[in-house]
Image (cartoon, rainbow, N blue to C red; front, top):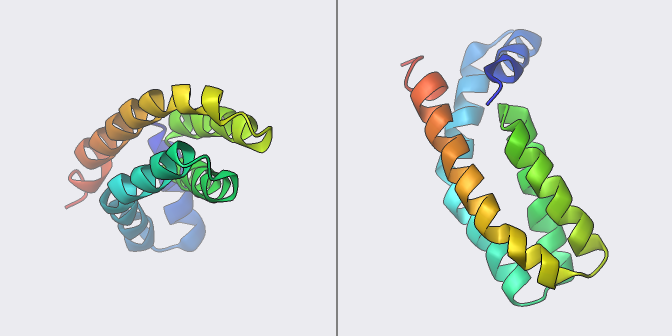
Length: 114
């Protein structure tokens, strides 16, 4: 986690509450976002998997989850090549890093600001 990313967002918007709400929404939506991606990869749904992984990559980068964003970018490369088998191998790592990102976000940013 790079919490400076969220601080920069708050500074740019001149409203810390907007960044706080974005982080809270990210944490709330994590499971749904992950399940959508995993299900699309399981179904071999390239378009659905691509949509889900791009959303995950961008949102993760915006909250400072840079490791998860890079992992999503790797997964995106496999999906774009139609290589969902290798992509499927990354799903467990996405889940692990995503859960860790949400926990750290909650512990160090969301709860810290309440």
